[in-house]
Image (cartoon, rainbow, N blue to C red; front, side):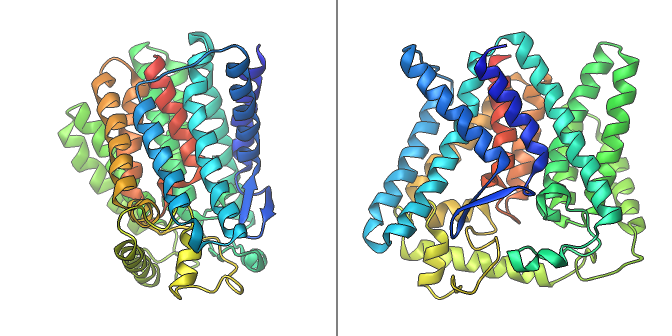
Length: 398
């Protein structure tokens, strides 16, 4: 096995550690174990291609390059309004975005046999995250002791290795979509063992989504499952799914009812509305190229929305709505480029969904994640970028 393949496997094996292992580079910028491993892979990939004078040009190269260029330009455009430290921290976010993009290009170097193995390693990693979630739910039901590090309490909710039930629920949805794709493939190949194995895994994952008590995750999975059924023209099953989901919402454990486990809670909804208003105000003041990618936390401080000195949370770095985050940080220019990139991913995956189950999984995952991103900044969450770019690369190389 080549070095690039080994490094790629390592990135997948570091995925289940989630946010548990974090290293703060400077105040306001931290990296997790997965980001570190992806960074090492990216450095090797770049040097390997420079030395061997090789280059991989995928279908998405143009929109990727254009959006990345706009991100850099937006930061340079606002350089005079940032301190050296703020510019450095913001630049690290661009670097992180780029190294995750390179995952897509790295897959072009892999043979079909290894690409097929990647899917099962992803399932293995997802299963570890799922098992961690169930262990956490029953034996570590609160993050109260980590509040001083900026994590919310999330009492009696499944948050797994992400330390946040909303992101955990969104990941479980992505993992479930991949599992469903594998079940469909197993049915076509008449593999009873795989049907049973992935079927049980899918059921456990579906239940876990409801144990996060995350409304955005529940909406995401329902949208995704509905898209799967629409693609298969299973209209009646959509109705059955809605009924089952309604029962699950009613039957979800309520023995330890808190604000977080109340699916009809208002506090988080009000916070998201406030976040959206802040992002729109910042965009209205910086419509062309925004405040710089990702200088959003410093813009919020400048407009008096937060106090960086005393605010310990992990949410100040971005708006709750991903597309508003793009608008505020890169302006209408970056927003247009990013929408084009998403459009190309959706268009290409839909074109191949009948021939390739990974393309179908990518199509469902992308649309569902966009829906989810109206509630949390999931489109720019490093673990989801990692997961999605792998699917994009596998789809194009299938």
